[in-house]
Length: 174
Image 1 (cartoon, rainbow, N blue to C red):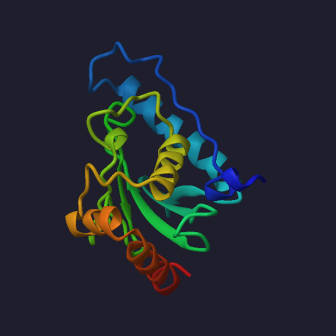
Image 2: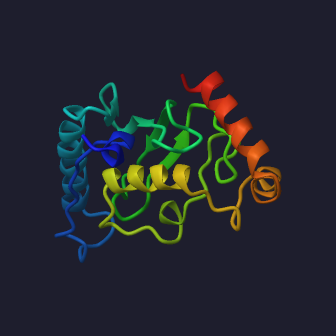
């Protein structure tokens, strides 16, 4: 496994053959459940995984390792993933359960990431979502922060920001 793969190692698939069907057809819901179940099985065999909490395929738990070379390196971060019956046509709600010092993730674990909002696409898999979150841990976006004070610190006093982020990682994610 390469350093890039150590951040998250998942595989998943999504199906979009019924995208032209009306929103609430039984066929679409059945396909969505089947796709999520298949994804869950694929992810459950990965070194790092995401999968349902118990028997509820709409509520998942995920693990992300802090990316190598980042201030989050060595951390193990737990996330919750909540799907609606409209998935994959609506994005899942992804939140950090582990506290993290990051300008794009607030104290409630809410993540400011375009693909989880306006730039969502049904073609995005959970694997791609987790990879995007790993990328955000490597390269934050202080221009679009959820936590303005952390973004300001990142841009004006990077050394202090990095020291604090490493302390939080050690305290909350190890």
